[in-house]
Length: 294
Length: 294
Image (cartoon, rainbow over the protein chains, first blue to last red):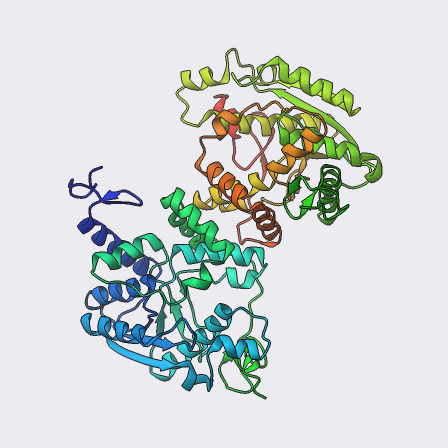
């Protein structure tokens, strides 16, 4: 197999066979095209990139750092100590080093300080007999914290490493769960619907996990996986991984289809939570409910 | 594994482990529920069931024949000689025998008479240098012929054996192909939009190919597959089969999600074809265009 761009021996095939050097160029071009096509980033935007240390968020931060001069925007990184057994200080050090390497300001917050936990999240959940899985609680707290941090620190966009695998997985999971409201937000950009809500962007919308892993490795990074343990158990994750393995192009084409699909949903109203003032579609937000604040 | 209904040894597991007898009951119950939930059939409806002799259409006709007295509707069967190398007179004889067995009137038409072909469809397509695959041309002609036959013979519903695998496959294929108009019609019932168009129903919407095969076999029928040769090549077919194999429940849950999803599409207008008078969304219908009628 020859690289379709330069004719050298190819090493990676997704949409077409490419050598390592051309894969990097083609990957970055694809991300740039998505950014431009969906106007994810405007001139002078201040983008906060949430980095867990895994392959996807590292890829996201790395490719954005390469594009920031060309597209003329500011960016910073935020890492969170999510207060689970998955998290270790190694992750913090790793992302801090990485941020220095790509010359991006590193920010760090801890769920302990943010939400006042006095023990690990897993134990806290067990003690309170909360039925939700740890991953789901952790995700909810992460979204809350990152939105609050971004807004309070003057960012107008939040970038996450969600990729084609995630989008396809969220789609089937929420289609089956009939969370149609959620499905309609599976787009490369989710615009703010309230002054306290920061617009979210997904620059890796059309990239595969497989590509993200290759991209960081070819950039001499060894990602630290911070929560794959739970994810591996998810039947939707297994189905998507199976498809990715058998037909690499498929997931990219699938999410490109989703980009154009618009659903009839009732527009939900966003209020400020009666307790903490953060944006929510209920009277009291899910985080205050979880923390049992009254 | 024990049958969840009767406690005997289970032999089939999809949503729950079942023995052969209970599988048949549960399968028929599921079809009946779909018919009632989406009002696929009303009292005194006259339903034409398109039967190719394959497992899906046989299942559809068989289960409807068992429900016709209870739900009080009339039904007949239509088989078509599609004039391809796939078709043989054995299929006609087989479906005719099957129709007698279940006491349903058998109707038979031939593409040769209907469209005036003087050679096999494959050769006709090659000769005319038509770029469309045989399956696609055959499907188009089938839809045209069955709608015309149904209308001219007083049927107000057309039932097809499309099952969860087909619906999921059509969904991903047309999502990727960005035929959004088509996706919005992937429902258990597709209402007529023109007096010349007969309403189509899909009673097996929530059933798997795997279940249809078991259902006909347990009813001592050996389906004749009339066109699996082409289908096997389709990458979407392969992906869906892979999913069906790994997670049987998944496809059923997936189509149940699709039942509730509504898309924003522009409503297409249905006219009568300037040449043949059949319903179409263009000035000249695809069949007349294909047959080069002027």
